[in-house]
Length: 408
Image (cartoon, rainbow, N blue to C red; front, side, top):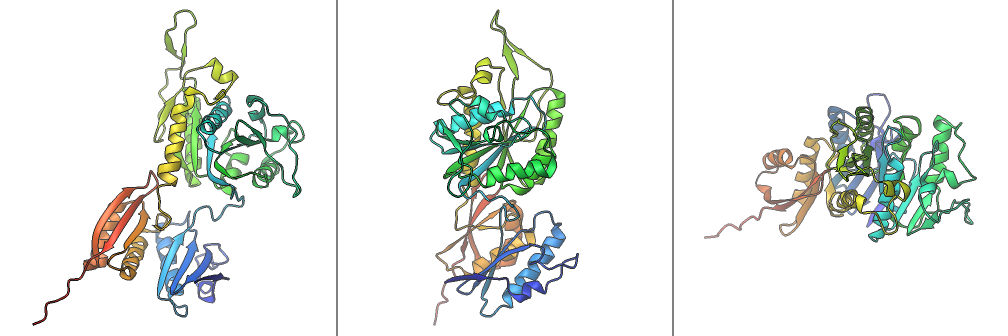
């Protein structure tokens, strides 16, 4: 039987370097008891490894001091510090670039259409308050947005895509908004929207790397990013800054799009490079798209655009193999320091039956297994690994069987 409630007193007695405790600091998100196991959900992103190690060990000790505590599982949680909740969206993907005019909105709309044509339930949110162009690129979309009985803005729908944009809320969005006021308008529209269940929510990010863009990353639970650039040195540099900003906020890069990479001569049909610069970004995949007048006029077209096939493949692979490849039963240890990962796995093995498998997700399986063999000793039996995507590897550990000793 599982029970939860206010974090118990032992956690409040732990003192952090700034004088606060894990409860007031938000490190401990939830404490839950299931039979004799104490589950402690924590968020420790942004802390140094030494501090993480010390805090997790103190939390483990506090949990073990609780009455009837037989086992402790410390669990890092995703998006625990995000103010905007999007329970209707299974996965949130941002399309972004710090450089304006590179075709970011075109890619956002075309990607949404392509994924919808493949059968995904897609949401498309236009976060560019200074230039909300998504409504202009979608066919059969006209505002204004209406509200339901709860006062929530109801997304407009076309081609299986639900869309909200400041460009269809009371007319064109005023461009005088700045900073917190601009972000507040975006937060209200995105977070309070009456979205129906969506497989993928695409956010067309505003250009730039501060103000609204930075606030959105800080407060919205974004899973992955698609970066858009042209093969021009200034655009590449700006896109790299965007990539750095996203990674600092814990957002995984999925792919980059080198837009308007080449063009086809109208006279002879020869393909020519628009720029001589080489796009070099630290992303899993780089998709090169030519300058395409049809793509500019009608991004994605009816049923999706063939130019976005590769980009859509990358997003589907990320959703299926990275976000969806981790079993629900697996213990997610990726944000814990390596020493804590080993201790947690040893504790899980100690409780496991010989016929049970312990599943866990780690970033560096080699380092964890080397230390685990020394820590768990003869208790560790078989080890299998399954790639969980770019963000982690799933370990499947089994207990070693103890052969009964022969009696004379």
